[in-house]
Length: 100
Image (cartoon, rainbow, N blue to C red; front, side, top):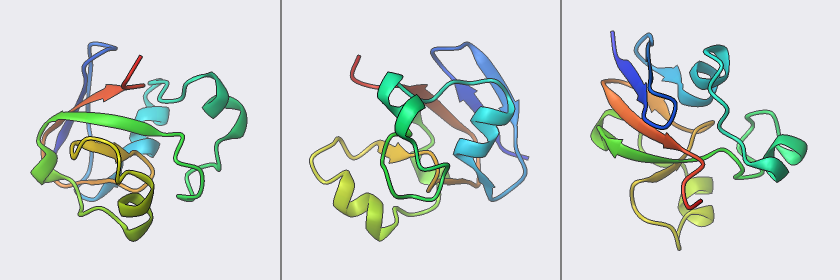
């Protein structure tokens, strides 16, 4: 089973293959939203882009970027993902709230 390490929170969780990264974060008490995201997030439907995370290790162990991610993240580093769109298929390390 894959593990997800949340670097900023110093927390590691186990996930089933294909688990949704946003769901696993919230299920384990990891806050992935900045202030405006807390107020305006779409609930994980891939519409708002507020659940931005930085993948520091294991980028190849996440599902491919969706078309929505490709559009929303085109000016972001390649290792940025939307947690609601990323499915975990192997060990990954994640930094929440990248960029400050």
